Image (cartoon, rainbow over all chains, first blue to last red; front, side, top):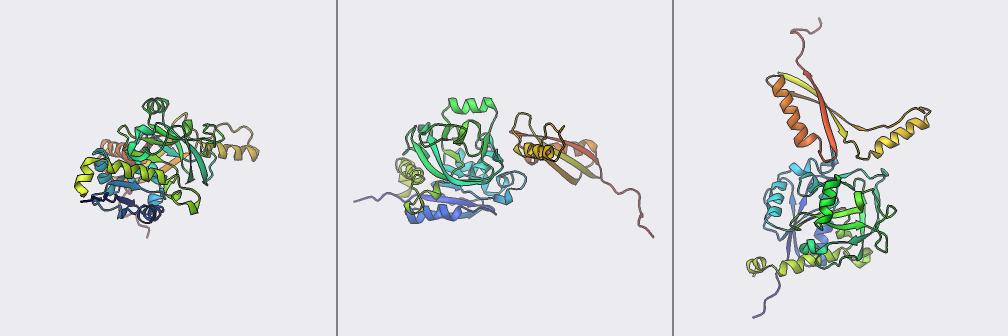
Length: 248
Length: 93
């Protein structure tokens, strides 16, 4: 008897104003061969996913503050429960902003220091990848990856004590850096504290990052570094006995 | 009774305010040489019902804590006053 590896199944949350859900679903289905389900923000059932994706965009028009209204959407209670049970959750761009507003990740994302919307390729240095085996298991500390950014409000801020705590615990996992991996002011596209581009929760299952891995998952659109986050997830899911049993 | 709260949301001291800085430099370029620091913020006028002043205060405080300000980078303050119409039958002839 041969057992085929179960296909990962992801749920992509969609809020009014979300714009990256189809890109994530495309990568999941067409590039990776996964199952992907788009779930509207008023739903409270995530439909038993292996992982949850909070995509980029402008949920609820970014009114008041980015993510401030989305965090109260009914689906967020289910996302919080999924995350607290250890389920892998990734929030990219607006998804990161929502995770921060929901308190699933510390700190906040504010208007870019130069007040410009920045849409560009960005080099990032990977750090503490072992803090998040689910999302970064296939990445190496110190390596430089290239992902697109596309945001007007990506300046990560937190009080110095929180920043120290995050760094000490290895929870800062991506920093804006130059092509040689140096974290400098020039390489920082939005004025984020300490060049922070991505952080994880204490348990490592919730990742928030401003860049867009789903936009760097096919060579024909300019790069495939983003795909490595999804490959990390796939490998992590396959190694997780509970999931393997349930899916066989 | 009906209340009107004017809620001011301001950035905490020490949080960079590029919008305020840009407004400040625009004012200086218009010739207002003495303009120093400018801090930007938000003003929200909210009408709502509460039994008395204490209940209204408590309600606004909760709104601020739950939604209107993010304590990571903002503070909220407010002024509260009655929003009841004054007198009855005040329609003009």
